[in-house]
Structures are given as structure tokens and as C-alpha cells.
Length: 223
Length: 258
Image (spheres, rainbow over the protein chains, first blue to last red):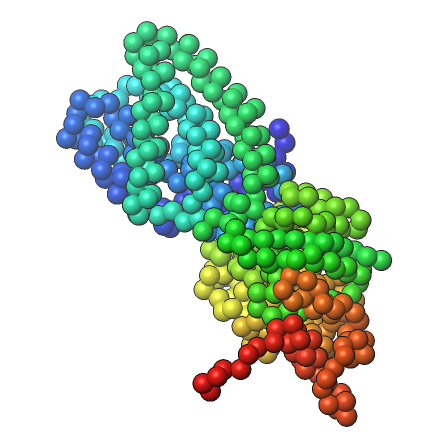
């Protein structure tokens, strides 16, 4: 797939919005929370804590793809853009933002972790993250259309959404627990990741784009 | 040549308010058409339907003879909008925003940058070029919005109240841009409450009232078309004609206690 100048500009804007000033303080607070939990609860795997904290912090990045800012949808719908490209770019930017935030929080937390991190732990963490990420993107795309939020911050609604997201994460962790932790079949887990990625790319992205096209006036009426 | 044709457009909102009641309108290429109406007459609804932001109940809208459908990418390249609400990514600086818009409309980055620099100079945005749009005045924001609407040289620019809430200098530069745009073959469709401006700026006017177009004709012919009850010894202004025209349809009972 070839990226055009338009795609690159949109991607850059998405990443800038992902790391906007309003996001930094909550992420910093969550990083501190992760450090605290890892130091206090040394039986919990640090990678699990990191993933939970990152996804809670980036919840709105997944579930409000149409409203990074309150008028994002209207502004984007003025441009001659294919919604499929827009959804794809937004999702890819979310993936990269997640990876970057994971790395930053991991560096902070693992420094304080009483456990020694082995290379195998890192591999398992990456596999675990890959297992949940594509289904989460899919759920986020659905949620963005089903319950669009023009603004997202750290209010009650947003915390409830973040809680819901963590529940999804727990459910989506089951394939990893089953295939890797219980059955010790990492290759089967990799195959599962490939299937979820294929589903996201071939079904979730086009389906979301088609629904945005069909429901644009209703989505624009979001209060 | 008709560039935009709206035929029998109906829209009723969920609360039962009928915003458009069979609106029919056509706009000729290269003209500046003023769209006049009272608050709530249906101007903004018409423009939001044109932009694809509000759904219509029935009716057709054609651009160069082709019906516009929601999500139609080809027609969006031919249109530029200044809506009544800020649509910009207001955390960007004016320069970043205009460059971004240019690239979104498919311009090469170098071409977009060149046009962006010219627009910043033309609209006197140089001093504020590094400030986020959110921190700028209403007039500045309107100018940025107009600059963004014309950066890709659209065939039709649609503006919803571009002169509202801005100072005379900003209004003047916007009016100059619209005239220049029309001279270069771009069609302009503008709603405004500033009737004096519409009279001086527009080649055509369309008067909308309760979702219907009551009158559409060249500005110079409005006086002969309206059966004015005004004193014929003095040539009435467009404002007087407009009030005369819509007040026939919106007669008010006087207050009994005043």
C-alpha cells in the first residue's frame, strides 16, 4: 500500500493529537500508578500492569476515533478523503501511539520493578500486546460509531468507558492465557494474532468506513 | 451555465421543526449569490445539507448536473465551505492549518506551501502566524476559514455568515477576496444578515422564508420584482425590500400592553 502526501499529513496530525498536552498529565499519573503497583504487588507480571495502564490512558484514542477534537468529524468530512483511508490511518496511528507510550511507561516502571526482566519476558509481552491490539481496534471502531463522544477527558463517563475498556482487555487476554500460559502454544497464538490482524484490515476498517459514510449526518448530530 | 441546482429540498428535524419546505434554487457559474433570510429561515440547514453534515428528507442537489451524494469525494474537490461554526483544528497555527488543508485537498506540498504563504500575506495573518488558531480573534478565524475554503481553488465557495462578528477591516478583506474569487470564475454562494453588503457584493439574491425560496433574481431586478408598499418616491434599499417581502409572510400582532 502506497502512502500519499495526504495520508502522511493525516497520520502526522493523528500522532500529534495522540500526544497533545491534555494527554500528558493523565499518562504521567498512570505511569506513577504503574510504578506503585509493581513495587507493592511484586507477584503481578510488570508487563500486564504496563499494558493495562497504557490502554486505560489511551482509551479515548481507541473509542473516539471520529472526535479527537470536538469538530474533528465535520472538519474531516469537508475534505475529499476516502473514509477507508482515514480509518486505517487513525488506527495505525493509534497502534504506533500505543507502542510509544508502552515503551515510555515500561522504561519508567521496569526501572523500579523488583523483578529482573528477561528477553523471553519481553517477547511474551509483545505477543500478549499483539493478541489484544487488533480486536481492541475493532471494538474501538464499533464503539466510536455506537457511542460517539465529542469530547473526552477524565470525567465520570470517560472513567466508565476506561473501565469498560479494561474489561474488554481482560476478555481479550483469554486467548493468550489459553494458548501460551496454559497450552504453551506460542505459534498458535501468533496464528491467532495474524487472523485478528487480517480481520481488522479486511473487515473492520472497510465496515467502519462504510458506516461513517452512511451515518455521517447522524454522527454530526452528536451533542 | 447552472453550477448548482437544488430542487424540492425538504427537511424536518426530529423535534418536528420543518426547516426546509420544498426549497428550490439554482446558482449560475461565476456569480456571487446572496442567500437572505430571517433567523431560522433554513439558510444554515441548506448549507449543512450541501456540505453533507445534515441529512435531507427528500429533494435533489446537483453540482454541474451530477447529483451530490453523501461521501461523494469528487464533488468535495469542487467545493469550499465557510460554515457558521469553527471547523478548524484550532490547536494548529494558521500556517500549519492552511498547509494541512491544502494537502488534504490533494495539492502537492510545495504548491500548498506557496498558496499558504500568499494567503497569509493577503489576509494579514503574518503577525499571528505562529499562534494557535484558538487564541486568535473571531475576525482572524473567519479569514483563516475563508483562506482554507479557497486554497484549492474550488468551483463553488459556500459561506455561511462570513461577515458576522468581525470588524470592518476584516469584513473588507473578506469582501475583496470574494470579488476576486468571482472574477476568476469561482462561483460564490453566501448567506448574510448584512443586507447592505449583499446589495453591493452580490449579482443575484435569493430570499428564503420558512424553508422556501420566495424570490430569486439578479440584485438589480429585486426592486421591480417586489411589489413594494414602500414610498415609491425614494428608491428603497435591499433591507427595506427584504423586510417588506418577508413581513408579508411573518405578520406580527402588536403587543396589547405596550
